[in-house]
Length: 220
Image 1 (spheres, rainbow, N blue to C red):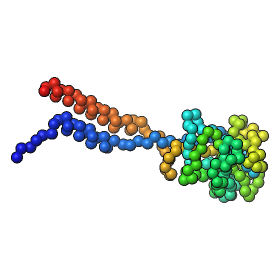
Image 2 (image 1 turned 90 degrees about the vertical axis):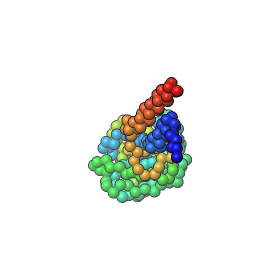
Image 3 (image 1 turned 30 degrees about the vertical axis):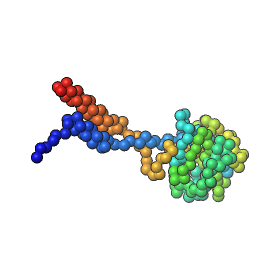
Image 4 (image 1 turned 30 degrees about the horizontal axis):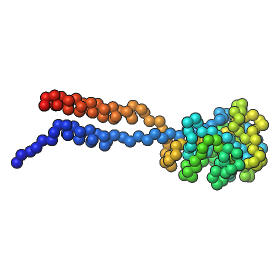
């Protein structure tokens, strides 16, 4: 019985195909926190509605809203979250009922973090996130003591929102991610060398195969 050997070129190509099948699949996903405050200690003001106008970063035209973060004085209290268009009246999604963090923000700064990733809220351009008081008028979300950047609005109604007269910044933030971001988990930066190493190895293998094939052809 005669045993036939595989051609060297075919054998090397099979090795490359096997190597490619084990290369890691990398997903370019990242989350971004949008904030216009510095979360220093400040105070509260007596308005029912308090909101921040957010703008997507340059080059990002739409994003998924992952987390809403704000600081209030009273723990375990109900609030309502309104996500509106740039007119601060048009509701983009139904009102969201939330409860503040179990810990009081005073004298430190303790965030209430609301995970909204499962709601699949897509925002574009400019939009508002507005916190509505329910039980304790006068305890709006915290504001810091830095000069206003023109993003914080207060009012007794959604339509009546106006730039805050105290010239400070409300501590209301959001975390956004790319459309299709999976629910749960934390996106961490990936080491670039870890990503490139297997591909560099593959490139080296392809060069080696090409050299072997060239030498074989010359001999033939």
